[in-house]
Amino acid sequence: MRTMTTIKRSPSDLAAFGGAPAFQEPLHVGRPNIGNRARLLERIEDLLDRCWLSNNGPYVREFEQRICEITGAKHCVAMCNGTIALELAIRALELSGEVIIPSFTFVATAHALQWQQITPVFCDINPDSHTIDPNRVEELITPRTSGIIGVHLWGRACDVDALEEIAARRGLTLIFDAAHAFACSHNGTMIGNFGEAEVFSFHATKFLNAFEGGAVVTNNGELARKIRLMNNFGFSGYDNVIYIGTNGKMNEVSAAMGLTGLEDLDEFVAVNRRNHLQYRSELEGFSGLRLLSYDDWERSNYQYVVLEIDEAETHVGRDAVLEVLWAEKVLARRYFYPGCHRMEPYRSFFPHARLLLPETEGVSSRVLVLPTGTSVTESDIATVAGIIRTVVSNGDEVTTRLAERHLEPAFAE
Ligand SMILES: Cc1ncc(COP(=O)(O)O)c(C=O)c1O
Image (cartoon, rainbow, N blue to C red; front, side):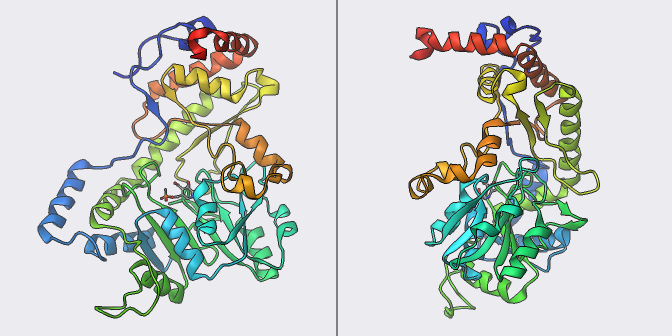
């Protein structure tokens, strides 16, 4: 039993101000979807019996095949994580100089470029969708620009069509970081079919996990062949290296986990969707709160419950709500905070970048991601939403009491 029965009706009930925490055990964001444990163990027994643990084993090949079936993309190269998959896609496509990306993304999108001496140029986002604003892309194009990486966030596609139009007209290579968007669609076409290539992450916190894992998917056979070579040191058969490569291979245990998760994909979507709708109905009507929505005509994994808190209306800031939730053992998360442009080495490279990124600055100061997934129950959500309602209904009081709390010697220590 994770929840205690304490209902947080007033600020004095909150754990931040002396009440008992609402949860005994922490409630996490991104708790892995485990899937059918018995099926996973069966597969692990099987691969141990086979003594085939890595190097393009049968489970990896089956996993790649299944990803192709689900996305409709022609080729999939599975890898050890999404970051290496991004690096290999960037390298195989011979991007160079500068590449335009949103700053509001996980830092791996920027690092995958900088790691290869390519400069990430940060573009602002659309505050409604949180994804790269195509209207701001063109002003960032210079003679050194070789490409654009769009990032599909929260299980929703970025503005693919506008980016495709700009890339085609300006002769730039377009790829997508689709780490958040496995099993999602854009205009009815599954993510995996846009740009030159799209990259998935199967990290433990992602909708589908392979413990750690990633993949490049593409409809370009030549590109897939090149990436497959790069992924395995450039080996083309025994003793024959025909290309410079690295080791990005997915192992068989990871593929076994990925395959097992795929069998429960519909269940993961259904649970996430149900959780999302419950949060929506519990938080509806509170001014200053905006829950990011999903288009019902698209497919989504509904993996993220993204709340935006507008302090001007609630009189209590996002960080204050976060502090209250953590005291209740609800480990909600700020996402992509404070933006890649405020992280090293980019902060030192572009000290004034924030002046060009007002929407990124605003969104990253407002966003709070709430716990969801198969390990979160209906009663957990009711409790979390109840805490948030109490905080925003008493915004001024909570803000004042938190400020007093920060002055207490015990807190200062
Ligand atoms: C948007 C985005 N891009 C890239 C990555 C990197 O993926 P991985 O952790 O599998 O390396 C992640 C997740 O961690 C991500 O959220």
